Image (tube, rainbow, N blue to C red; front, side):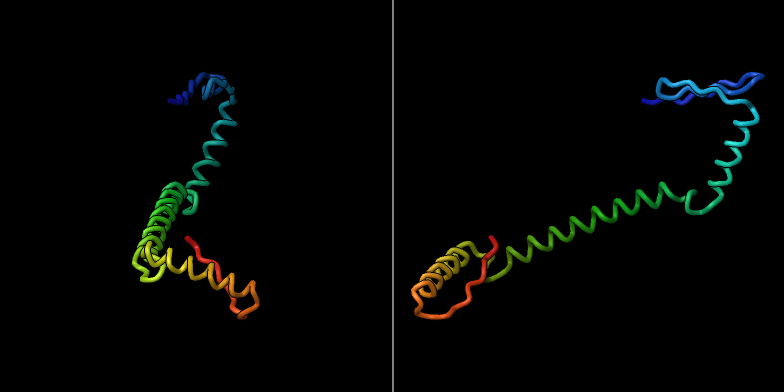
Length: 114
């Protein structure tokens, strides 16, 4: 837990944060506070945390949906989704590769992703 503490005095402000201490005169602290408030009046800075959080959540959900759809597509594929058919196609690919190496036929062998 990080504690941010401000101690005001007649001469200025002491800021304590993460073990560091910083002294600011009242005029400088007042100017920084005004600049901060001005920044927050801009819509982008006012909504930044919400927008960043929502964007991160949206990307995670999109990635999960994509992964789920890819897995479902792979499992439902009648050719490569069935492990017996996948083994059969792998053997067939091996036999075709041997025939091509012997020069019997000119077959283009495509790679199968497992």
